[in-house]
Length: 127
Image 1 (cartoon, one colour):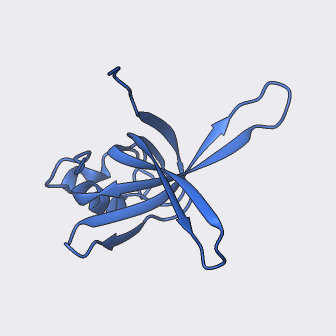
Image 2 (cartoon, rainbow, N blue to C red):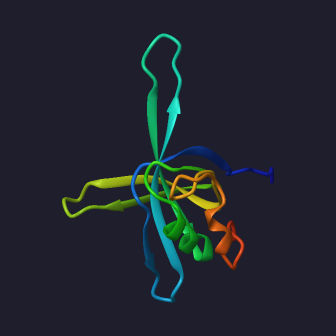
């Protein structure tokens, strides 16, 4: 069997404040939207929006230290989800499940480094 790779790296700006919840077994899960720009030579730049999911201690740190407009680096893998809605239509969503998040701006605008109070390493993931 040949080896395959599912790896995503994004550097962009957070579009909305992260939303955190806990799974029934107590694991933190934070979701956020990340905007990346595609520069076009002969037209207006285009923005792509990415749904990012972060788990565990990293999810808690992202929820605490990241806000709308901040730049972050995200590394992880693509996950395809599909379901049927109430109307019987098949729906699909592609998410980036982050294994690493690097804060490039602080929440208060003073540059990177506001996450120095984190006791656990940022970037740890359950997968």
